[in-house]
Image (cartoon, rainbow, N blue to C red; front, side, top):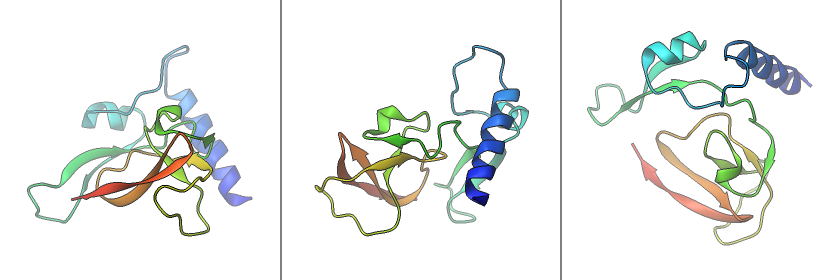
Length: 120
């Protein structure tokens, strides 16, 4: 219940931080990120020159059911949590709250699980 309430608050907060009728996009600069109440942070190992700065802000459709990453504003449809998913198997998914910047993971494309390459 707390998660649903938190998600509703995030969606409402994002809706109020955007002009009416504007399409949602992931902020690409520190100024845009902070203007939309996101947190600009370094994602990766501290001191690693390959680490990327990115905006940590939840997409308004986070948690929505999806079949492919193109269905999600964050660009990532993740298999629903709760069990291990093997690549190549069918699964249902949910839109991730934000784009994966580094690490390992999985995504759904047309309802099929695929492993994503690991990144720093």
